[in-house]
Length: 115
Length: 115
Image (cartoon, rainbow over all chains, first blue to last red; front, side):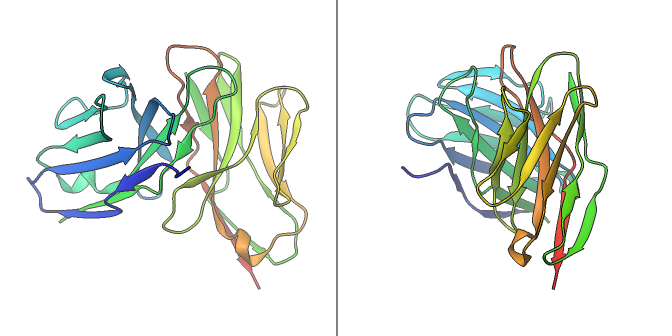
C-alpha cells in the first residue's frame, strides 16, 4: 500500500506563472488535506476536501488559490499568478474517514520556489 | 480555536544525553495531541499520539510524551538520544468534534544531536 504521493517534489516557477501541485491519497482514503509550511514556521492548514467536495477552505487565501479532488484522479492545488511569497513547502495528507481515532498520513511535500 | 506553542525553536544536545521538547496548547474543546517528526527534505511522520486512556504514550524508537491536562502540556522526552534523532519535531492538536478534522501545528523544534 503506497503512501501519500505528491508530485512534483520540487517546482520552480517564475512570478506570474501557474503552479499545479498534485496529491494522490493512500488507497482507500477519501479525505485529503493541504497544508503550507513557510520557512521557519509550522504547517498551516489550507483546505480539506472529500471526493468532489470542498469541506473546509478556511485556510485558503481568497485569491489565486484553488483546490479540487475529482471523482477520478489526484487532488490538485492550483496557484495562479504566483508571487515570491508563495514559495513554501506544500504538504498533502489523507485519512480514511473523519471521526475518532483516525490518523492523517502525510506526503513528502512539494517545494515551490518562485523566482 | 486551538493554538500550539513550542517554547524552544532550537535544542542542541549531545549524543546519549536526555532531551525534553516542550509543547503547550490552548483549546476551548477537548483535543487529540500528536508529535510529528520531519527529517531533512522529507514529509512529516507521526511519532506518537494521545487519543485517550493512559496519559503517557510511547513511540517505538524510545520517545515518550505525557499529557498533562491541568498544565495543558504534551512534552516529548527521550532518555538517551542518537545522532539519527536529529530532525524537526512538531507538536499538533486536533479537535475531537467538529465539521472537519484539522491539525493545528506548533512552529517546530529543531533537535540537533551532537557527537
